[in-house]
Image (cartoon, rainbow, N blue to C red):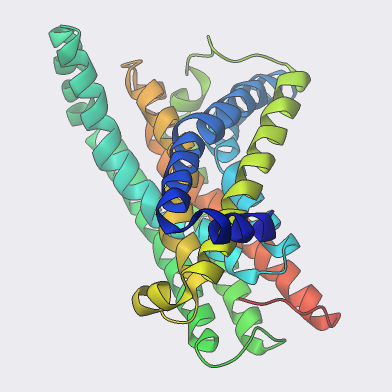
Length: 321
């Protein structure tokens, strides 16, 4: 696919190729990835509630929205590029500004546009009343971001002057991510002990128990992230000089950190908007959990990627950045 895109650029020139890239990114951002993830998330929540009980749904809903990050990283590594690990690590920051700033503003504007002024007040009062819950999710998200950022900087520290190789840096990255995961699990267990009703009373009107829908959504996410990685690799090849001026030599890594992370975080934004609109404390917890739980899952995805990276390097499999 990457070679076809490079050949297409050579045949049509810069302007048509840039326009095509923009059209594809819009389709991936607002149609393919969000809707595929929505199918997968709703069916995963229904299946989790059926087999593991209602308390599992919040984590499953927000964890399922991370499948684009996991797929993007896995597809990137399958293409021989370790830089895809930057996607879940970059999403740690994208989630924070999307869910804490963009999502509530979008919901309030939607309420205002359709004349639901009373719902605007209800949401604002709910957020004010549940300020401790909001602070919990903000702090939990910030902590996960710090651990992910440290891991990212460790990777970049070795990336400027040499190709990826077996080193203690990879183990150190894995250790940092593992500590972040443990810290989050401890604070999450504390919240569940203090506020069990947040996890027991969330609405489940939109959840179903369809393995078929879950499979279709998963295939859609994989296909979408494959196309995303193919364009990233094509841009890296075609626009090397320009992109090196912005990102340095690790173009593919930074594309995943900035662009890929934003694109794959949009499903979390849709989940946050959807649950902000329900105007109850348990659903507010799910909306806010689209940051904290999603960030926790991103740490897990990053750790899995680092583990695979180390194993492949140990086995002598060469990966480029």
